[in-house]
Length: 233
Image (tube, rainbow, N blue to C red):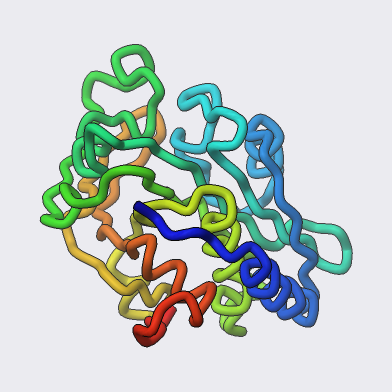
């Protein structure tokens, strides 16, 4: 069972990242309507297409089971986007959910192309179950890159996820180069997260699985929550 979340400490944690983003010229906000989110992403030049996992026309997201973060620059133009949702996998695991295509489509039999496929061979995927927070669709505008912005902003998603869901696991998919270039510094990662092909989405990717446990997330947000040392994030 997950421990109790110290919401006061979470608020302090979030304030730190919000202030750091403001110092870099980005004003952050949170939203819950994914129809609005898709309209924003479609109108954002240079952003990669949003995968169906965050598109309600392909994967409905109940209120309270998803959120998105937007960062606006001083001209009120979109500079940062990220989304997250919760999967309740009490009788399954993230590996099965990926391979069934249910991560991407609410009804794979209805929306998936006959040639769509997802192979997950990461050994730890079978252990990632229960309340699983899935993060993705991360985008930072080119003129803000190379300034450590992802480290400045990135932690805010972890704080929101902890406050909203107190999950058993937080996970995401990313390609190997993100590790090589220290875009992410996850506590755990394995190859074979998702050899993914979504034909109509023009997606063909070989992703690693990256994750942390709920206890690790709580220690990052609240170092006093445990006597164990805080993991690098």
